Image (tube, rainbow, N blue to C red; front, side):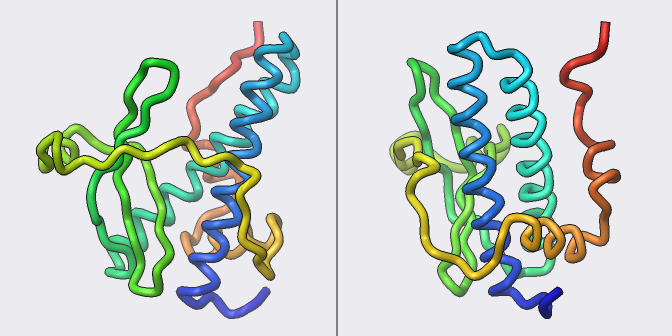
Length: 158
């Protein structure tokens, strides 16, 4: 595995974020097609990826490598979602669901509206999905199993 630098961490987060969006889109399509097995797999994969990303974001903020910039609002199917917007000194930026406290920090006119970014918009990276997972797990000091234990049990067996 390559040396874990800020740039490698940020690129890995980009790769995982795109992969999570692909799983989100697949989950939505599978749900519309009533393909329950594919919908479950896509949701489980998406949740796993986002858990790694959010834990990495928390650590990057604690380490002073990622800074809270503001709140973005996304309107999807007549529902508003508020996303906390973070940016690195190197120009990498990421979102995660905003907390109520973060939303209260901003007046409504200071919240920027954004559209849903499709998974098809890409920047070429030299890191693959598996390596990106390994890099972020190493940065976090966690295993895949430890991440999976942090996820809620989505689909209990009957």
